[in-house]
Length: 289
Image 1 (tube, rainbow, N blue to C red):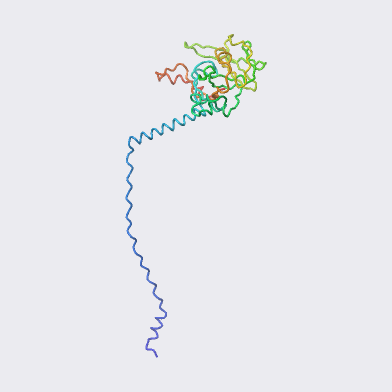
Image 2 (cartoon, one colour):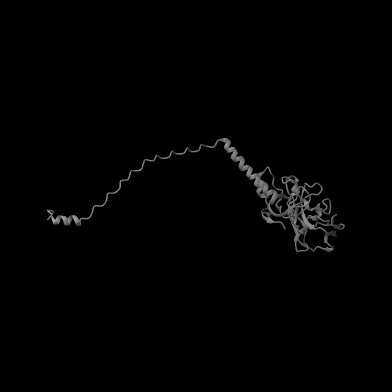
């Protein structure tokens, strides 16, 4: 018989075993903080000039692309298109209206070389009667003119007693309110004004002061690849009835779309205080009929 105490034995059997000791984890090694990066120093004058040159270059490139391919501004220096366009009007011309020719680009073909330096047009689209068109004067292929396109290839154009005839029929001409302007002395000057309506419905205003050398002409037959242009101020316009003659298709620059500014002759460039009063606000941002 064992000398062990039974009660002590029972206590040892029923006692729960002690939980295992937690494993020892080594402390993390010390991590040295990264050295701070040196702050960039101020840009030198050379770097500043480089950035300025880049900005100017990109701005000029964007302006050149817009002017060459999309829109070009023109100002109106003469009264041949009154009352549609007045002296001092500034218009945007849509250059992609009729496609592109060598005269669509600066210097008559640069920078795209031989692709546009030959005759004809690329991506050509036919103009419509009644469009107000900027074109190169056929006499020198460099001076910009702006007139209304009246005759397409094959059309027969004639003036009889101040009335426009197109393909043997008179173009409807209706008298409307006079154009009223103020002269240098502040007096009202009235000019008879008419509304013409071309076949197809295009309508616009013309001026006719009275009998003139252009009121009666022979018949003009527009040759293939050419157009017949006339100014809305019929008695004071050098156009296809005279020295301009027929305008080749390749001479078209684009269609006048929008007046974005208009300044009368009261503005003096060296007197800035005269500028605000010279602006014709009612004509700004209006479409060209």
